[in-house]
Length: 319
Image (tube, rainbow, N blue to C red; front, side):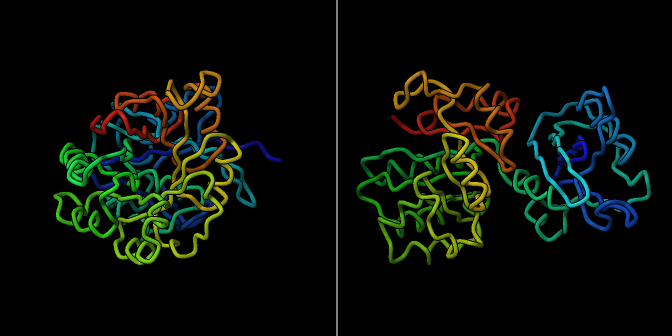
C-alpha cells in the first residue's frame, strides 16, 4: 500500500460564525469538490506549522491560535490520507483565493448543501457539534428536570442527550416544554432510545417532526433498526474498541466514550485515562466526546486527546 499522505485542514470561523470553505481546482485530485482549507504536511514539519503555512499560501490568513479538532484516516481508490484537522481560534487577514480558487463563508447548518470529498464528511459533522454534551440525570419532579435543561440552555449549551429519567414526565410533555424555551431551535436534542420503550407509539413520529431531534443509543442497542431514524443525527455510548467499530459501522454521527476518569460505576482497572481515550479515538473517524469522571473544564484535555469535547451528567445536573 502506498504511504498515507499527511494533510492538515482547518475549520475557520469568522466573527459571524460562518465557516470558510474552498473549491478544489478541476485538474487536481477530487477536483470541483469543496474542502476545508489546508494542505500537505512536508517531511519534518510540525502539523501546526504546516497549517499556518498552508493557510497563508492558500487563503491569505495568518493563524494566531488553533486547537486540534478531529483526526481522520481515509482510503480512496488512488490515495490514502490522514487528515489532521484543526479549529482556528484566532486569525488575522482577509480571506481570498490566493491560488485563484473559489472560496465562500458558509453557515455551518448549510454545509450539507455542498459536495465534499468523502474524507471531509466527519469534519462537517464535527463543525456542527459543540464541545460540550449534557446528559440528563435523575429528577423526582418534572419542574426540576425541565428547569435544569432551561438553565443550561441559558448558559449557552447546545447539545443534550435526554434520558427518560423522571418518573412523572412523558415524551409529549418534554417536547412541548422544550419548544417554549429560548434557544430551542439553536440546540440539538438527542433522545435516548429508552424513550422508545417509555412511549413506543409516539417515539418515532415525534422524533422525526423536528430537524434538530436525533436519537442516542446505548452500546447494547446498537443493533436496533435505524431505518426510521435515517434522516436524524445519531449517537451512541461506547466503552471499547469493538463498540466503537460497531457504532461507526452502524452509521453513528458521533459517540461518547467512557470511562475516562474516576467514577463510582467503574473500577480503576477499567478507566481509560486520557492516554487510553486518545488511543481509541485514533481508531474511529467520527467525533468522540469523553465521558466518565470528566467536567466541563476538561474540554481542552479532550481536544488534545483527539476528542470533540466532553459529555457530562454530574458536572451540570442538580444534585
